Length: 82
Image 1 (cartoon, rainbow, N blue to C red):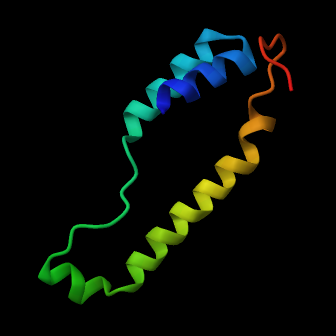
Image 2 (cartoon, rainbow, N blue to C red; image 1 turned 180 degrees about the vertical axis):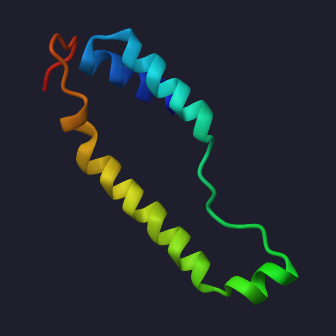
């Protein structure tokens, strides 16, 4: 899936440096966690609300990605136009 995204970025911006930047950023942050590792002490200190905050962050990030994908990938000389 990341390969499709990288090609999309290249076609929309027409610049390979943007793809290198996106790939480097993806390698740096890694994959998102969809859950957390539970242990006895963490559950007592943080409680269940941390799970809700993490899931809300994932949902907000997915919505933001969807809404900003086309506006943020407009390039000067795109290889692909809408």
